[in-house]
Amino acid sequence: MPKRPPLRAPRSQRTAPPLDRVERRLDRLDRRFGASGLPLDELLARNGVSRREFLKWSSFMTAALCLPPAFERAVARAAALAPRVPVVWLHLQECTGCTESALRSAYPGIAELILEYLSFDYHETIMAPAGHAAEKSLEDTLSKHRGEYLCVMEGSIPTAMDGKYLRLGPAGETGLSLARRVAADAKAVIAIGHCASWGGPQSAAPNPTGARPVHEALGIRTIRIPGCPYNSVSLVGTILNFLLVGDLPALADGRPAWAYAKRIHDTCPRRAHFDAGEFVEQWGDEGAKRGFCLYKMGCKGPYTWNNCNEMGWNEAASFPIRAGHGCIGCSENAFWDQMAPLEKPLADGGVDIPFVRGVEGTVDAVGWALVGGAAAGIAAHAAYSGLVKGTRGSGENREE
Figure: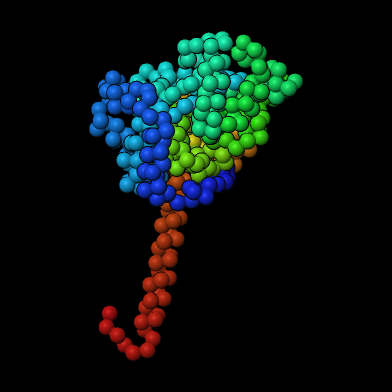
């Protein structure tokens, strides 16, 4: 079994911060960023989201962030402030799939709506300006909001040949140079998706471009939100946490602990079938129709730390395991190399499979195990009864 990622909590996050301190911080942010942008209530109303649904979502996010119920109002305030916080979003060596995952949802939830209306002062995929006008938007944000903007990086950073494998903008600046400039004065740097967090398929062997994750390429501390693609709820929750306390959340191996401290295997809806030894043996078989465990079909849930089972995609409608395919471990370091082949169990995975062939194929073995357990129980009961009787028989006679 994989080891639990080491947990590291910033000093201010070892316990929930005092609520009054959080409220004072939100007051400062409200004064600093003013009422610019579309009010959240109007944004939600335009998309058919009622106030009641928003408050229910706020309660859900409060619980997800491991905060007491008293923080629900503060979480709602932070969500209302989120669309006003300046964000610089860089696209580096990637496929833009993480942006597409958040912005192209068929049925966007509140998290996706908040992301869509963040104050993207620079985001190459969705911003209106182009060329030199786009670069001016970037430079204006870097100077006007120095030390206050959030930097989100999507994609790995090629470092070979001094970063010349990736050039961006009309001046042909390397991705490595641009990432360094933007990260230098950011309030926090969030690496989203597997590419920015762990290097992505670009970093798979033989890695000719020298692709590296953001924290390694720049030598800085980042908040990593891995996945291929990442889950938008995890990004919004991390932004809310940052707005509430002004610091990094508690981290598990560089990832927000509230989202990545449990394995897929721990909360899998098919876990009962694993424990019972009921497995899909081949695609489309009877076990597949009955929702049996996908471990034998290569599911990497026992090695993967993520919250896919709990959050889901498209208003929590589904995720790969529910849809019938095993987890591929896309939130883990070097999964393209270490989790392959993706549709076969790892040869050295070290997972003990209960009953090996499945309960229905081992009725006799299971039956004898139950008989043995019953016999052991009877023997233990007999020994205990004899001991009690022996104790009671010594000394004075007592009524039973």
